[in-house]
Image (cartoon, rainbow, N blue to C red; front, top):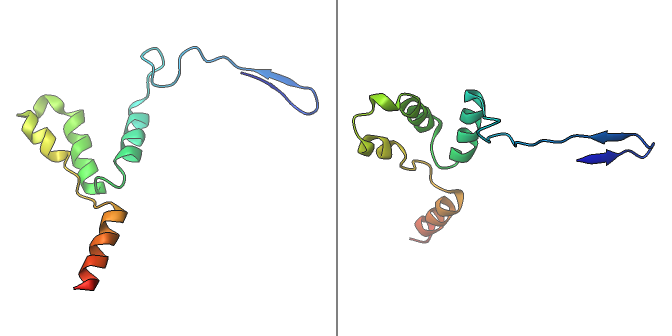
Length: 91
């Protein structure tokens, strides 16, 4: 990337491997931050913590079924919740 400022200064930066590439991996905390951002609105904080713990200790999980059960959404999407409230009010 090349940037030239209004006063004529020039800055250049090249990134050969984006963050997350195997040659420029995410740190454990960056992985957890990304997970939390993607899981928000799908899994409660408690469910996220349980799933993260299970994934970090995957070798201790007895079966894939147990892991999959932890991935079940426990937060209702806002639109679905709003529709459900409307239906309840009409009755």
